[in-house]
Structures are given as C-alpha cells and as structure tokens.
Image (cartoon, rainbow, N blue to C red):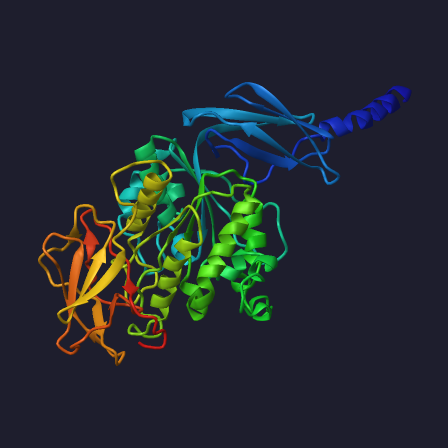
Length: 477
C-alpha cells in the first residue's frame, strides 16, 4: 500500500512536466510559408515560464519567456526562399514539431466578396478558367500554400481561430481558395521561382470601416462615428468588428505586403473613401510594424447597381485613384474592361490576379520595362472643337488603333454630357474625342458611369485604361 501511495505522489509531482505542451495558433502549423530573408514572428501559449524554438534551416535555438497569461513571442531569422521543406520544434517541456515549412513570399489578402470569391465560384457565378486551374493545382503543392481565416459572429478581439489550417495546393483544397489570390500567387511563383503563402481574411459585403479601429476612423473629418459603430449594422459593416475578429488573429504573421479588393459596399459614402483607406493602410502598417509595406488594390469593376447610367460607382473608383496620392508604396489595377452589368462578381479573376501580380513584380520585385498598370489620363487639351486626351503607361502605344472607342462623353459649359466619338491619334498615346452636339467642349469623361458597355481602350500589354473625368461636377450624371 505504501509503495502505491509513493507512486501516486510521484505521478503528481511530474504531472506539470507531462502537461507542458505548448499551444500554437492556427496561423502556425504544418505546411505554412514563412517570409524569406526576414526576422519573422513565432508565437503561442505555454504553461512553463520558458519556451525554446529550434529552426532546422540553421539549427539555431531561440528562447522566449511567457507573460502572466502564458503568451510568448519570439523572432527568428529566415534564409533565402526555396522549395526545401524545413521544420520548427517548439517546447516548454514537451516538444511540438511543425513540418513541411517553406520559405518564400507571403501576402495578406483582404476585402469583400470579390476577394473572398472561391475558385469554385458562387451559385450561378463562375470563375473563368477554374477547371483547368484546379486540375493543375497539384503541380503547385510545393509552390502555393494558403490559409483562410473563418468568419465569426463574435465582435470581441480574438487572438486565434479554429477549424482552419494551412492548405497545400491541390484540386481538392484550391477549390475553396480565393480565386483572385490564387491566380496572383500562381503568377508570382512562376516569375520568382519561390513558394508563395496566402493569408486570406476577407468578408463579402464588408465596409472599410469594419477593417479599422475607432481611433483611426475618428481621424476622418466629417465621419458619422455613431452610425459607423451602431449595433444596427451587421458585424461585417460595423466599425472595428473585422479589425478585431479577422485581422487581429493574423497580425503577428510576417508578410511581404497586402492585397485589397473592396469598395462596392462604400459607394454611398464615396467622399470619405480615400481618406479612410489611407488611414486604414497606416493602421495596418503600424500593426505589422512595417511602415513601408506594399499595399496593392483592385479598382471595383463596372456593374449596374441601382442604375447603369448613374455615377456612384464611378465616384468610388475615382476615390480609389485619389488614394494613391496619400498612400506611399501603393498601387491599383484597373478592371474597366471586365465588368458585368448584371453580376457584381465578374468571372475574370484570372485577369485580376495577373494584374495584381504584374503590379507586385514590377514595383516590389524589380522587373523592369513593363508598365505596372493600365493607361492613365495625364492631360486634356481642347483644340478645334475636340478634346485631345493624353495617357501614360503605354510605352508601345494605345490600342485598338483603328477602331472607334466606346465609353467617352463630352460636355460644354452647360454641363450636359453627350456620348462622344473617339479614336486614337495615329500610333500615339493620345485620343481625340468629339461630338456634333458640343461645339465648345470644356469637359470629357471616360467610363464614368456605374456600367458602360464595350470598353476596349488599353495598352499593348492588355492592361485597360482607367476611367476618368476632367470636371468636378459631382451632381451631374
């Protein structure tokens, strides 16, 4: 009896050691991709006071101390990226080993439904070239990995989430991956010959206010703060909710940059969108402790909304362009040519992903002699009853050269816009615009409505021209 009693006492003495297994967040797991050539954060929770972290790529051991809540965080150095799988062992008594870890390029992908839209498409809303892409997804198992943050009804700040893990590219997993993000990653890995990790935290129908905290939104002059944080708003449109539940759990994960596809839900307050996005980007960069982290985003695509001839969406697109002036190290890609009048989710996510990748490859990764985006209006001259519009970002000229261009409108001093005829001048970067209804033009617009039909103006690389207007008549439709 005494012998059994002593054994029982000894078992209790050693129980804490047996239970000393660290708890890791969902963001840290097998198959993840870590940012190359960086000091990346690893974190979690533990019962013990000390945690050791050993990385196989350099056989180095790091130590971290837990705080009063058992949380710990350590920074580890990563090498140049490649396809060699590594492991990380973490222990405060009982070791936990993460395996099949790749070193490469990591991007945070956020926004609303056009970023969230999976490779399988939505009900009755397809994704172009998805079948072939899915069937080939297994070829990228060592090149593309992704994790998708799940939605929650909770509004409180969360540090972790459940039921999601890092996925390896395959037909079965990629069917649920953000299509725009996956096409971006596919081009990136093909061009850089490096693994790409995608952290996808998006929510369909979300407003930009939900992706920032209250102090940040409070810096925007004229904002109705009470309306923004009203409990009458759904979680995905209410101030701070997605910042707390979708962004906060991934904030420690070191990444190269941000991708953003959002704006459709903010058409009603377009006049605040540029300063809101600028403030949000500054907040995110502060959270990631990376003041110059690239921020690349997608201009919302043409769609009818209430009425195709209205200009609310055009004004939001203009605000997105305006934000470039106040967000350093940012870029925007056009979608003027891929809209659908009756579907807010255009199927050409392969085009969106390619254009985002082009932006990153030229601006972040240093590929030269290619335009980062589509032609942008730089100036307008009025000569002989015509508007002569000059564009940039077309090093080999504009296209289609010998066809009449759709989508242009012109107005005189009476502020009445008329559909205009337009054509490219020779092989230059200029377009002539005119209308028999307007004897003395003073303003010209291009694709400046919610939806305009056959938009074809682009550079010779296939990047479409951005919509624009030369007037400031917000109340003129």
